[in-house]
Image (tube, rainbow, N blue to C red; front, side):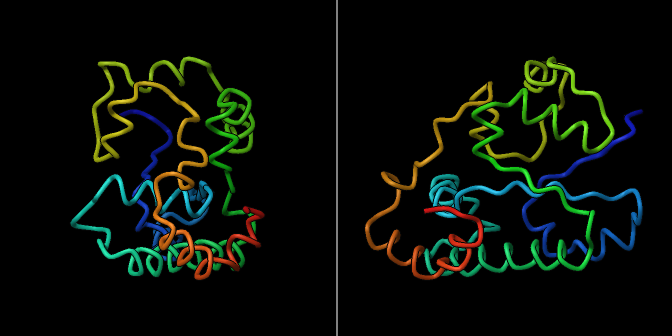
Length: 171
């Protein structure tokens, strides 16, 4: 309420970016958080999201590929509308990363953002329950795919997402 910016982090919004663009026009910017694809899959396995994420691993791969394709296609067709933010940079150095991001969107970064995002005054939303329970930004999930995915899942994901792993410069 009373804030000049609104944000929503529902991943499926990436499929509707053209509609958001039409609705909000110049007042619309996408902050695309890019994370190691296999870490995303490990996180999806853990989180469940039974109503919105397929439970079979090959279907998860196809869904994630579709989301990446949609995000990058929109960015290519709409130069200047998408800011890519590396998850690994955000969780490893949140102050510096957010300071740069805020500057890019014309805002002033205030360090309290990092301590207040879990305050009692904040109304909880529809978010990953792990965020609600962690209480702070941390980097413990970087590289989690190495232990959280089965060997078969690693092979399937690496094979299916090889072009993205190369494009995004992940190993």
